[in-house]
Length: 94
Image (cartoon, rainbow, N blue to C red; front, side):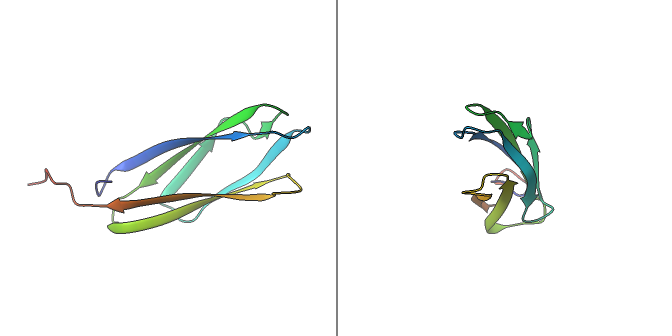
């Protein structure tokens, strides 16, 4: 990733259970990471899209961020998405 860029990625969260899956909270590990979900309640057999943006401004080198997703799933109430990358100076900068 180039220092100063905002990197975006998308994840799909699928409900393979029999009841609606409710996303109660999505918590990034820092203020440089933001998320947006298209559905907070996912019907059985359906899925939701989670968009994540990471702002690299002021960061450099290897970086690891997490996104913690808290749901009503009794077997797995907490899930984590790990974002890992290396932030470098812009090679085209003057």
